[in-house]
Image 1: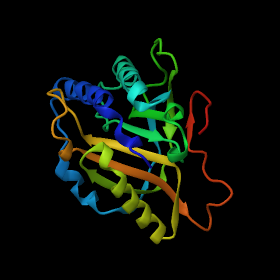
Image 2: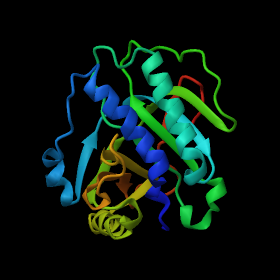
Image 3: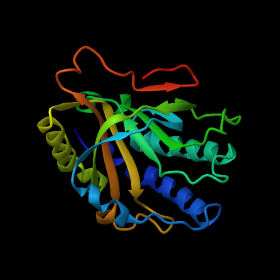
Length: 226
């Protein structure tokens, strides 16, 4: 893949500016401890439960649409009351398969934050053109994941290492690529990109069982599949 995971500083910084503001106020200045994720420098296969999320979808080059998508994501997250009495995971994003063969203008990004069951519907909002929002479920099951340390545009070797690990175990990936942003830009600016921490994740299935279809990927209150 090309550097499709790079979301660029303008978009990712928005996430971390808003996230830092939440950490410093409603969540009591809780911080992310990078050391808690260091064991993931080695790839692993684990079972992960499905997760209910607030998802914002945007079609287009992440350099162009990422800021609007993340902006709406956090606007809805806070206005829905999801942050009240609930400690969320960090933001994450999903991308469709085969990005090497797809023009950046046609990339489909899904940006999300987990929400509690108490959030049953979205607040009234006016999404930017080409941006959608829903409460949906991200399906997981068996996943392979690894921690990438460093710049977003230098993830390719880590991705290749993870995929080699998956193949060696007799599995194949499906459903596209996921990133979870553990450490990134902050309110003070981009910081040191060499110290960013990003979990790279794929859903996987046994290679001899996966041919001819698999789980749909996601199911949402909006009725949309995929």
